[in-house]
Length: 471
Image 1: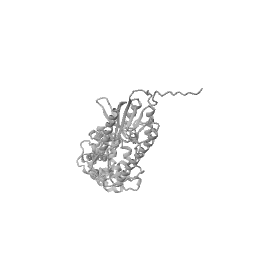
Image 2: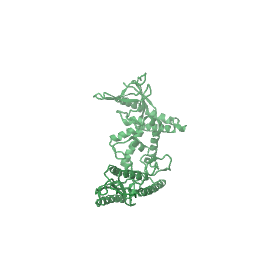
Image 3: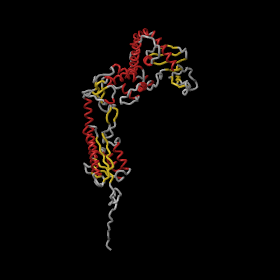
Image 4: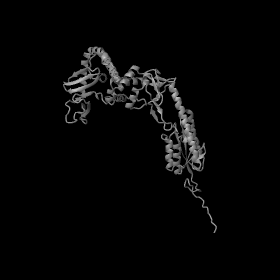
């Protein structure tokens, strides 16, 4: 008998699993994206949204779902594209059958992202259509064309990125300085694009430097600024320790500018890295009006690099933190709260290692009022001897700070300038102290050593030691 072959026609779509004769409308969404916030791109963004809304609604066999959009977002990767990611999630959950977009480059300029996403959608029976290239991803040639077009889009993105990088570095080499003015405290953009002092904000910058030179840590400065309800450079109510540090170390406040502090590692991820010599840097001197005098700025940098500051002052949470030392073991005093839930609540300070090991420190605890009263007595004693202290300092300073070794140059210079500030403050103080002054505490005291209630010694910044008895 002759072999007979009977063809059984397909009854379902291999892509959607719907009956070929099904009248069910395809659920269709569109994706629009512009990569900049320029005015002409804004018009393009609005036009895309309007066009796709009309286009999808004009088809009787399509059911309009939504136009998903991202404005001002790069296409190099999909991580930060909220609209795009929401669209993909909706598609994978069955809310979309077909996604339409203008071109492959609008979808993604990263070949891997593009193909991975398309394959994931295809596995879930979701098709994509790219108008400009006329590519349907369910078409047999669709993935081949998509791979080629995605690679071209990625190379276009690489070329644009390299051109932008070259232009930026050329501006750096020409000494053209720019900063993110909306988040940079103290300066506005001038008519020529350079930095112009904003006097209202500059007063805050000067205050930060002044507080630091008094002895306050960046953490303590941040607390003061928040207590005074001064907004941060980004306009927030809270100040971070790191924000204060960045202001204290930014050379732009002395009128100079170091360019190319960071660089972009990869054009796809846009990841930035601190420049540790991988690419050229440019230092522009006297670029704009200084807020902080260069000499004062340099003093702050030396203080920041000082070992004493790094070890003990970075995270001070109180004016007495890292300022009161145990005469028995040499440890710092720490604060403890007594009767915290009663009307007798008070804060006392005692050696942090008082109960460590077998041998307990015999040094007494002190309440804050006692510390303040003893400080006033010590300062007034100091003021009665100030002429002698100033004369002695002027006589020995050249010998005392003779720098013989490069290893200690920063430490000695920082110490010298700190004592000079102390002496200057002492000269300007004419009257005795009648009440505790926090600014005076920071500007005069190096630390306090507690041996007993009858032997509490105040060490001032010039190393003058005055014994103040707790009566």
